[in-house]
Image (cartoon, rainbow, N blue to C red; front, side, top):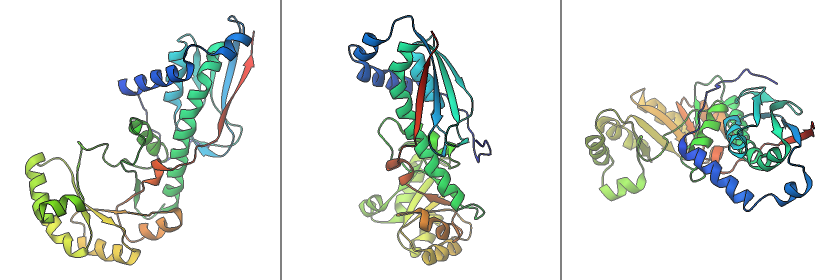
Length: 290
């Protein structure tokens, strides 16, 4: 187990996330857990240990805590490590003590959330480690599960990545369809700046190096260099010359991310951090105490 993490952020669930967990519990429980009700006495007490079955970067403890709190407020949830920590097989992340029935009811949803979010964090950390020393930062995208974006972006931070815009409201992102509809990239930037004012970031997708000067002069603060080769990225970064933040995107893989980072880009955005990760392997072993 290691707590030497690039980022280990505190996290509080919002009202939407708490409501989603409540809905997920109702989906799973329905009219009742017939297996647990028929086999486990009401008075039985147990201790559950959530542990890693493989090497992983942990994420999702606040979500597991909320699951068990909604199932049974009397359950005692104790964390033994922090989100963002590197766990080895057998490491215990948290324990839950109380009604054995309640432990069994909450087990699956808590693990589903922790396994997915730890998968996001683990994948992110692999990319972060691959670009170490280059100065480039790994960032996510809006390619997330509907309604669970905040959780997935939290997991990216647990893995040492940084968050891109949260949604459509907190940054302008002008892409090819916007430019084609307006007819001019600089004009699209000017319209956006006039609408949102001086403070909101304006990100512009750059299809050709020839578009850089017009975008920057019109007020773009970040240039999204999409699907460019490392040589082309290096040329674009040199042309920008620090006038705007540079972001590489498109088809980034572990095998290619180092070469992309070494071009001098500031950010590398990777949709695969959230849209196609493999869940990390955790389980919860429950011991009956009485």
